[in-house]
Image 1 (cartoon, rainbow, N blue to C red):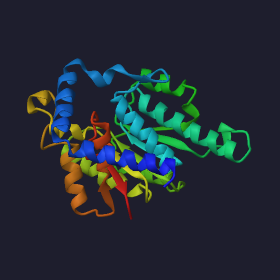
Image 2: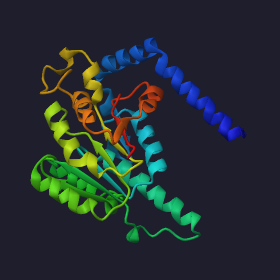
Image 3: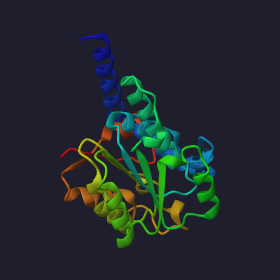
Length: 259
């Protein structure tokens, strides 16, 4: 075993140990519940745009994007656009590394890689800022409910032109809505890629945290994931991701398409 392989085996053992440490996993959930009082996830940005995410999940998505090397990333939920900009910048890096490997100069104007964002309400000031961003040429936005037939048809029309697709779901977090999104978009995920369902953490948090929301424990992205997986064996939860992150909004939400 060479040093690189030895290191990777050590990492696997580390992650397995983290997954087995139930006390540490519970402590991480407690930490997540406590920081929510300070709207922790709201306090970060990517290349100047607010990104309402935990930084750990952004790091995990970077690892997935490097591994999968998608040419299309579909995102349900736009908000301020930070996640779209993040994904676009990662795709730009893929193009750059591809060009370097081929001994060529990267030309963004001819890149096929794209981020497709969907939101029921793209506020004018957010749209303006996203469209003015240096990453804008890689971003396409669709305004409409992510589970409306018209929207689904538009997304599938775009997706038909791409081979390696990554899907991220982060809009309305009710069980019914997320389940409908999974039925609409998870099937677009290419084999070996991921459908990432964010905010599955809702199911692990105190019910009182969601008194002003239509979702909560038992009516959440995680409950939708559990139901979806019962009839979709082509996906499995990549538990190693949430085990190693500890701090994540997506426990059991990193769904890898295996067939």
